[in-house]
Length: 182
Image 1 (tube, rainbow, N blue to C red):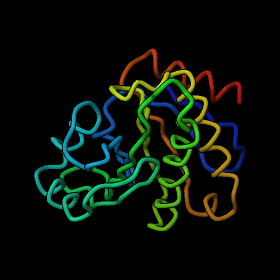
Image 2: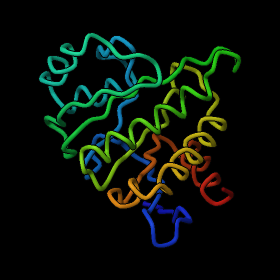
Image 3: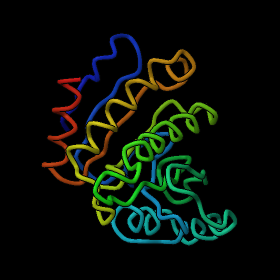
C-alpha cells in the first residue's frame, strides 16, 4: 500500500491508504455518519456491517448528532477499538458554511482521539459520497485541518499516525497530491 509522509518531520505521521477503512488496524476509525446516527450507505453502511448490530444500539442512545460534531462508540466487531462518528455537511453549493463544518469534523475527531488517548486514527473522505462535497475541496480541507491540528502540542503528544483511507485510486491521488503540496 502506498504511503505518504505528511511532512510533519518528527511529529505524527500522515499517510494515504487505498482500501476499506473497516479493516484498518488503528486505535480509532472515523465514520462518515448521518445526523440521525442511523445505518446508512457507503462508508457508514460498511462500518455498520463490519462492527455488528451492537453498533446501532449504541448509537441510538445519542439521539442524533449535529453537523460538524462527533460521537464515539466502541469498535465492536472491528479491529479498531473505537469509532468516531462525524456528521459531515451536505454540499449546497458552498454558501452554507460547508467548508467550516467539514473542518469541524476533522478537528472534533482529532480532539476525541486525544481525549481517548488513541495513538492512531483513520479517516474516510467525509461528505464526498452521497453528500456531494467536491472531492478536491474536501481533500484540501481535510489535509490542512489535520496538519494544523496535529501541530498543537496536545495532539502531537498523543497521536502518532493519521491515515486517510480512500476507497478508490482517484480519491487517494487527491489526498496524496494535497499532502505533497501543503
